[in-house]
Length: 322
Image: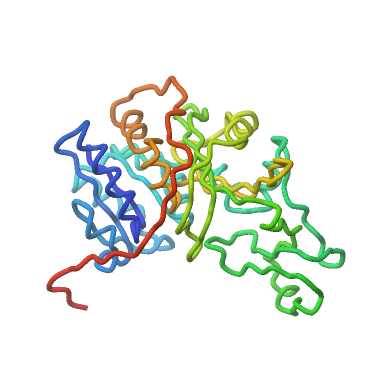
């Protein structure tokens, strides 16, 4: 009944949340962490144990993962990074044959989420507005440029006039030229969504992004607003979606119009705010996947207007050697 958090990195709060909830139901249960550089991972130091894994593009990644999980009696894998999702989904059958359940969405849905052009089409097919995409020879200022397969706000640009455009913007075929949704008019929300094993939406927690650092929310606040019924209306069922999804939306400050931006089918870096507000995804995952409990009700019992302000802390490892 042990659990593994992959690509643990800095996700100390997520490790602690799973440790707390697992101990309530399985007092002897342990939460392990895996990382490509575990000795330099804060979350690995907090976990009940950790191990090193090869890079995702290594041919022995899955076999190494299975070997360690069997050795440590790990029955549940929680992925936390986009690049590792597809491998787990593609090898779901092999993992389950070895008594290991990956809490990961379907390979098909993961692929939709990985390409922001596809997720825009998915939003539109479900009645959700998206920012207008311009062609390379017909656009309007201001506009927002981002790669269709990007993450953590890498290679994104706000272009306000013709002078700001560079040759590199046109030569980079991955860049999408998009309508700019001005923060003066729109509020940005990351919503934590919980989908049960039947792909039914059970919980929506909108988190307003106040300050972002390195692509991760540093200051945020929960808001029970128009996004909750909106998402329940348009995304109550997503084929292949399970566990935690983080979905990004922009909401207009005055007319409440809503635009879909992207979906990441995994725990996001800001999820600890939703957990502390009462949206107990770790507990529900443990109940569904380790106890076989059916999640019959919708969980709306989370605290709105809860502000999270993050700060840096130190984790010391004695006797460390390179």
